[in-house]
Amino acid sequence: MDKLKAKLIELFQSGEITLAIGYKQGTRGPRPFFCRSASDVEQMIFSNDYQPNLAVYLTKKEVVKDEKVAIVCTISALRSIAYLARENQIGQSQYKIIHLSPNDELMIFRSPWDIDPYIEEIPSTPSEDDRRVIEMLDAMTSEERWAWWAAQFSKCIKCYACRAACPMCYCTRCIVDNNRPQWIDPWASPLSNMEWQINRVMHLAGRCVGCGACGAACPEGIPVHLLNRKILDNIEENFGITAGLAPREGAVLNTFKPDDKENFIK
Ligand code: SF4
Ligand code: SF4
Picture 1: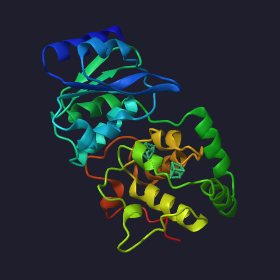
Picture 2: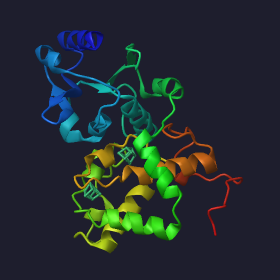
Picture 3: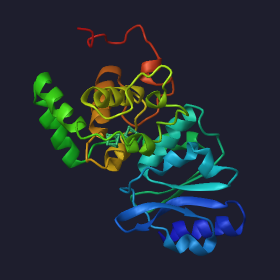
């Protein structure tokens, strides 16, 4: 942590950055910290387990504006940045990408392309708690699974915190905000809640990095990230695309190979 703080202080003092996005202690745990001076760096804290995923801010023009930005990244944030670069949402040398590895090595990536060789070595795996729920759901019949998710989504209040927390949900106009035509009812109801989540997970299929920030953000405790995790696993199994790695040839639902399996067509 000392190495990270020293580097940020050096970058502020040399004028190379005007904003460092990292974490500080909040009343209920770590929270995003927009640090604007060397003297404030001392408040910075870091662990690779922290939520939220800070990469979400890099596509928000109102946050990064004309600032010279350093972002302090967890492994999940690195995965997201690699994806955002592949989708042309961030430039090659637009941000200073800083990371503390689990063995405390300070790493600075000159470009998002340099992230791939590092994260390729780190598997994206769900937590033990999440794995247990996934196994429970896998053991159900499809009718039981539908009923389980319908009960979960009956709690949804359509606050869209799951969308706001996701670095890969960056459309300037989301389908749920569209009212000409009105694709999905804006109020919470069993049907529209299900429509909203099916739309959300399908738009993220093959693009989700498995960070879990959407589930962590849900005020109703709905584990929406597990839907995305299941799709990640399905994609890995059927298309050989490693979970959490941005495929060089493009997202799986945007591309076609003649030898793609079609065993999902029933
Ligand atoms: S869908 Fe959820 S788990 Fe996937 S990248 Fe977005 S916030 Fe992370
Ligand atoms: S964060 Fe939870 S309550 Fe809010 S829209 Fe998403 S699923 Fe619904």
